Structures are given as C-alpha cells and as structure tokens.
Amino acid sequence: MKLLIKHARIVDSSGCFQGDVYIENGTISRIGENLEENCEVIDADGLTLMPSLIDLHVHFRDPGFTYKEDIESGCRAAVKGGYTMVNLMANTNPPCSSMKIVDYVLKKVKKVGLIDAHQCVTITNNFDGEDISHLDKLDEKVKIISEDGKDVMNGKIMLKAMIKAKKLGKIVMCHSEEHSLSDIDMRLAENMMTWRNIEFSDYTGCPVHIAHVSTRESMEYIIKAKSMGVNVTCEVTPHHIILSGDNYRVNPPIRDKGDVDYLVNSIKRGWVDAISTDHAPHTREDKNKGAAGISGIETAFSLCYTKLVKEGHITLNRLSELMSKNPAEILQVKKGLVAPGYDGDLILVDLDDSYTIHGSEFESRGKNTAFEGFKVFGRVLKTIKAGKIVFERKN
Image 1 (tube, rainbow, N blue to C red):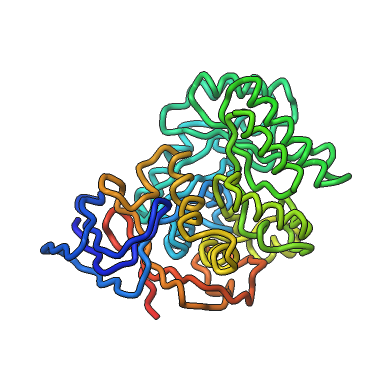
Image 2 (spheres, rainbow, N blue to C red):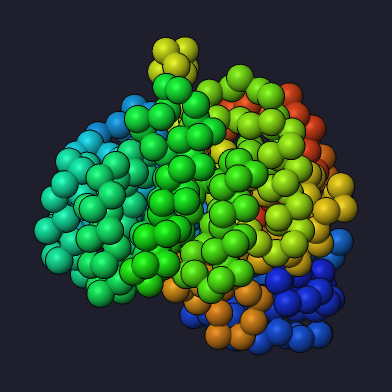
C-alpha cells in the first residue's frame, strides 16, 4: 500500500510546515517537498494534515450490549471522527475479565479493518470487587486494567491490584468515584476517590491514569502529585471542558463554570495529558430512562478545536499532543506524530469548514449528544489508516 499526500499544511505536536508525506507499507516513509512517487496521490492544497486521533476511553458495547453499539458501527464512528485507535472499556456483558474476551474483541476489530484497538480488562474478576487472580493470566496485549464506572471500593483490594499491576507492567485506569458518597454529593465522591487512587499510586509506584477528571479539586490533587513525581496521567472529556450547569446526564456529571475554567487552564498549563471522549452510546429509550453517557467520538475534534484553539487557549500543536501524541505514548504504539517510521495514520481536516452537530447524522448507533445544534469548526475530510483511506467525506 502506497500513498502520497502533497501540498499539505502538516501539523503535529512538534511543529508546522508545508510539504508532502509518502506512506509505504503502512508506515510514513518520507516527508519533504516536491516528492514524486508512482502511486495514489492526494492533493491536500489548502488542507491541514495531522496525525490521526487516539481515544483512551471508549465503549463499543460488544459483547452483550450491541443494540447500543457494535464493533462495526463503533469503528465507522471512530474513523468519521478522525480516530484510528481506541482504548475499549471492560464493562461489557460478560465483563472483559479474560483473554478469551480480549481476543474476541480484537479479532472483530481486525475483521472490520478500519482501526486498531486496545481492550481493557477488569481490575477485579467480573467486577466482583474482590478477586484479582485473573490478572496473572493476562498476556502482553493487555496494557491497561480498569474497573471503569465501578472503581474498586475496597481499598485493600485496590492496593493489592496496583502492586500486582506494577509487577506485571500494567497501567491502572481509574474511574474515581466513592460510591458510598454518590447519593450524597457526586463532587465529593470524585474528589475523595481521586485522592485515594493517587495516594495508592504513590505508595506502590504503579502507573495510574485518572479518567474523565471533572472537578477543580481532583485536578489540583493530580497537579500536586505530578509535581511530586507520582506516576499519574489524566484525561478530560470535551463535555467537561465545554458544558457547565447542564443537566445532561453523564457520569461524572457536568460541573460548574469554575470547574470548566480550571480544567481549561490546566490544559493550557500542561497538566492534562489527554482529551478522551468517554464515548458511551445509548438508545433513545435507555437515555430517556436515565442512562448516563454521551456519544462523542464523531464530534470531539471539532468541539475541541472550536473551544480550545479557535478561542485562543492553546495551539493546534498542543491539541495534537492531547489527542494523538500523548495517548499513543500511554498505549505504547508508534502513532501520534507525522514523522518517518511512524504508522501512516493521518487525518486531513478543513479548519475553516463549519458545520452544525446533529446526532441523527452519527455513524454510531448511539445518537445521544449534549451538543445538538452546536456550530463547530474543523471538519475531518479524510481519515487514513496505514496508508489506506478508511473514511472520506462525500459532500
């Protein structure tokens, strides 16, 4: 597979320049000016070429909940949004607590052939909150373990899990929520568990990734920990850095404007490692019954470009770092930069093109969005995976 992209404005976390990119055998082979190759050529004059996006927090609902999303619809949604790799959560049915389910999911993703994926495994066996013996049976394909929306309430068990994860070379991804406090104060529930998980990371040396940080206090704990050298990374979601005072049901909830401003400022100051979507598709019926979640993988880039770059908070280079380079480093994959030797996973975007978000137009089975009717800039025109065009906007 050979592909030459010419006359593009090339942007990644390291810089910006005008030129051509040649991809051969799935890998970026050469970058320069006036390149000539006997292969398919894309004229990208007037467009911006960037590394494709990587999402560290995604629900594709397979196995068990494919009426909400399945692997194929999730992959189509991903490439439409500019993503060529996702990190899939383990709250399936049955929960992903074994290599059998990991291999099942990865095989289906490979068969669809649009993206790459990493499948998380539960911290405790089948989310039982106690048994971590299954972790010893994981192979090198599993790099991250997570209890997702449940967290591990028993501190002793979580501590043992981190000790084991450190030994096995795994990252523990934390949905920080103290469930005994959730019906009292969701803010306190997040803050207390964020603090606990960071303290456990400091005690064990286990790398911890804090998912969907939403409060000022949680971010303050993370900043302090990072300043002290604790092995912690974190992510924020588009909905938590754009919306405030909104009653759209997500978990953790939409917070106050003060939290939003603090999270955005933390992005500007370099404390946030990644922007992840927490793509959580639901049927209309499930949302009407109160299901928490937002279908976000198709709109994340445009929302973040509009909010963070157009408003002058960060550069496009920094956005690429948050949505491509850093997630690639966390997942330990050769993606996220436009450089020779890196995977030929790229997106072509028109930064001046604006459009209005309509959930009915999503490729995802989940049409649930808090951004219905929002006008955004930065449309993904093409998504390229290993030198192959896997999404192309037709109009």
